[in-house]
Image (cartoon, rainbow, N blue to C red; front, side, top):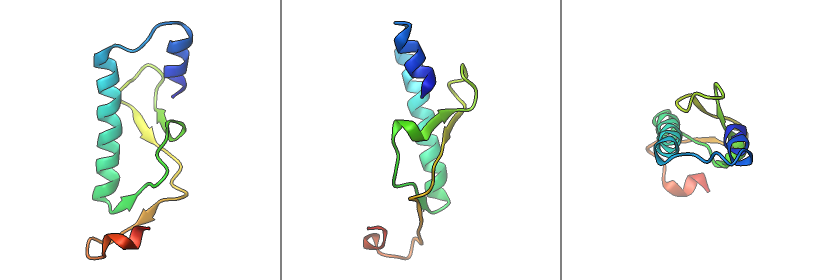
Length: 80
């Protein structure tokens, strides 16, 4: 999220379209890991990065240290 901090420091805030592109990328990443039966459990701005600084579509979710793999057959209480 250094890109966003840099833009804020320059007083060049994100447009609504840019913000929606970033959110869409984050949600697509979450959808992907959930399809792989993985729960991240530590999503925060520091764990979301851009693959390329000016490419709003290159969102990466990092730091899976607290993540858990789950089985769709298990009860949701298993993840707690």
